[in-house]
Amino acid sequence: MVIILVTGFEPFGEYKTNPSQEIAQNLDKKRINGFKIIGRVIPLRYKEIQSLIHSHIAENDPDIILALGQAPRPSISIERVAINIADVSKIGYNCGSAPKDEKLVEEGPVAYFSTLPIRKIQEYLRKHNIPCYISNSAGTFGCNQIFYYMMNYLEESSRLAKVQAGFIHLPLTPEQVISSPHSANMELQVMKRAIDLIIEYLVQGDKRND
Image (cartoon, rainbow, N blue to C red; front, side, top):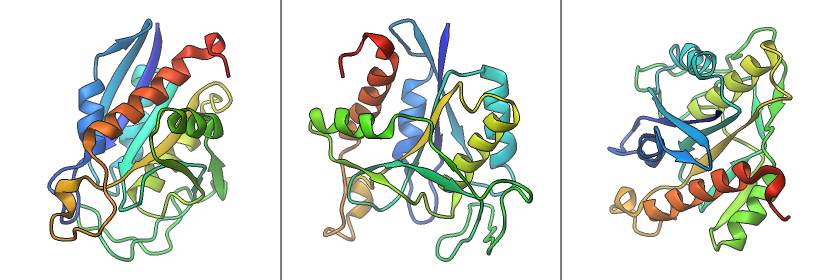
């Protein structure tokens, strides 16, 4: 059985919802072409993220990992790199933590690259009329944190080259920008469709015709 782990974050800051949470919960226990999807929601608590993503990987032994999060960006952003730093300047973690210039792993590498085929994913989403782009910064908050810890764990467990893993940022929903109507946003159903398409592309494997 091929396993896909999809993670999302709980709401944070002023937001009462988080589309990454809703998508991860919606996908949990679904099966696509013999692939089993496991959806998990991570609390946005600074000291808990590392142990939780490590335990979810260890428990489920996934072949593909899609970590999802949210940011006020113009469209879906496919992250290229995670960096070894936590630095909060605006919104703090839900636990109240606000790290400044802290290394995530003291002796860890400066950065890790996604092992997802990010350019092909971008092309596939655009082919299906989903606005998206490749981002070269996942920030220095919880999204970058889980991305870095995920890749570091795969390296430490000698699975970095074997697992397709990476991070996807989702935009705000229309409901989240009611008080800021000029802000970029995207309907939740479009985001769900985008993640479904990414999974579809990855599970096709050698059968797809690029």
